[in-house]
Length: 60
Image (tube, rainbow, N blue to C red):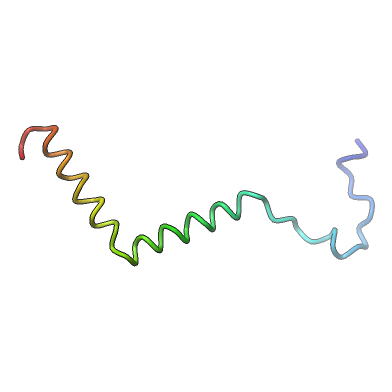
């Protein structure tokens, strides 16, 4: 199991915790969600979802 061992613990670059690759995706998702919230697009999407739901039920 040589690949699982950290042989050089004195090197400062290797002793830091690695940042997972999915972190960039999560940060991008949070960024785009907040941009949409600032622009007011959640309200538009919610209104469209309510109208579709009311049309499917037959109330509207």
